Image (cartoon, rainbow, N blue to C red; front, side, top):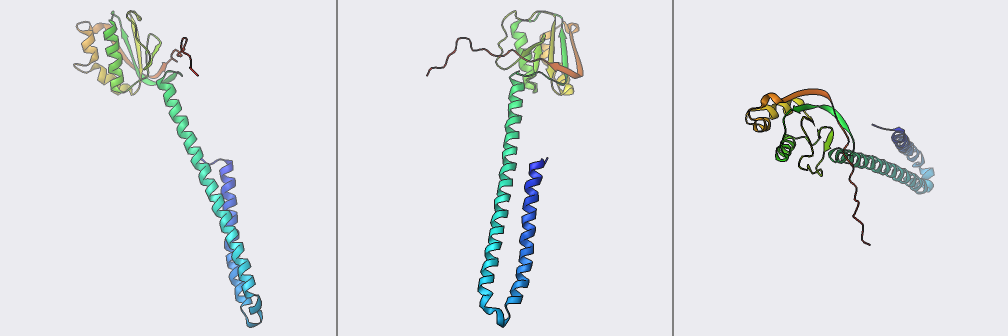
Length: 210
């Protein structure tokens, strides 16, 4: 979307272009006038003057157009970097996020391996926005043994229909983990799921060697 500065630059460019076109028209009339026999002595001087003026106008238009292109490109690059940074912040759990997704409630103890398998299954489905018992699970978060306890509330942000279908399909991860205790697994979909911010990484013992 154009901002005020964009309109100012475009306006100046159009103004100079208008001057250029008018000068071309007037130049034609002037040359017709001075081309009469009595004015042939000043013809070369007038043509040279008009040519220089037109060249100066062309240069100004080219410069302004180039400046506008650079300004637009710099905005596009800045927006691209901003979008990439926002994506990285989401994946790294630096900010909370919300949207549609699924909530799984599991009322039976799970082993560390089962929890890791469930998280990996969610990532394979296509979501990296996951929390377990309100703890954000990021790519650099290691799940220790017995870190989470039953009952579990697992949230996954993404297309709720795709997530629910992939989790509950025959032979899927829920069936593998649940076994004969499917009644202790509950999956609901929602349009207002909130995934909290994750824990920030602290480099307590690392230092930069100069």
